Amino acid sequence: MNLDSRIYIAGHTGLVGSALYRKLEAEGYTNLITRTHAELNLERQADVEGFFKKEKPEYIFLAAAKVGGIWANNTYPAEFIYNNLVIQTNVIHSAWKVGAKRLLFLGSSCIYPRECPQPMKEEHFLTGPLEVTNEPYAVAKIAGVEMCQSYNRQYGTDFVSVMPTNLYGPNDNFDLETSHVLAALIRKFHLAKLAVQGDWESIQKDEELYGPIPEDVMASLISITKLHGHAENVLTVYRLPFTAHQPQPAVVLWGSGRPHREFLHVDDLADGCIFLMSQEEKKLRSLLTADRLPLLNIGWGKDISIEELAILIKKTVGFDGDIVFDTTKPDGTPQKLLDVARMAELGWKAKVSLKEGIKRTYGWYLENSNNS
Image (cartoon, rainbow, N blue to C red; front, side):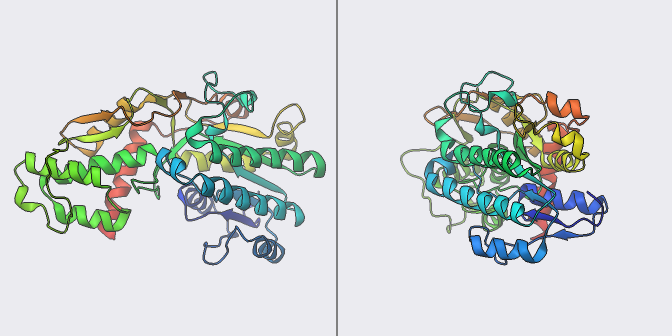
């Protein structure tokens, strides 16, 4: 990519898209093309084709997607498969029609089998059953990978797919009903800290900014507040009277805490994606041959248990209280760790440690809260 290349970032307001935009702008790229959802609905084929015909982007980062955690995937499976299939189909096909030089498709590590050998290598793709809690989303992402491969084979395009591990960072989704685990933990521990302080004004502001607080979480916050002697601070607008069943005065988390997950700061992902898009054509083409899927894992290369992650976030946030795991809730896949050897071969590796990344993300959370 040249600094004046026409670069389209699909989904530039989201977690990944915003990180890509920040990184590209910081590196001096001057011709960045963006559209909000209100300006361009990527689910409408005619609108997408008209946009591509007019703008003729040379490089496309396809970061637009419907994403969410276990609860969201279980609750809205039809939306997860439909929205993602339609968005990626429209963008990939339109990129080919206008002769784009290169496209990078953002997939997900959930495309790999539930019982996949660890760490997960690119060649494990399509070798076993998927995790049932996010299967519709995974199937949509698998279709995107196959679409990129098919267009490369038939039309000679340079479309590559990257499979990032679990992401976090600025502009993450902190809605407790739809967020991924790390963002949800940051918010839960932050709310619990406010409850210890009896600061219900800030809890109310947090709810207005980041989305509704589920009733079970709210009940625990009330219990924490009362435990610490601030019962008089519980605002009457918070619709949960104390009932016979006394919620735990603790942060309650789904599952056993035993599953292991790998996490990557979104700024590292943006750096890796731009690194790939900037590779020489010959070098990139070597990754797109018939015997090697156009598929590259991007991750940190190490994982951590959910319990260890919770303790780390608890310390970072400064909550001095208990953690309770609700084992009646699903754990999801036992372990998800990516093999990142192929990216290392190309000369790239992640830089932001989990401890530092969580510190940065919580700092952004507080700054965003204070400025809103």
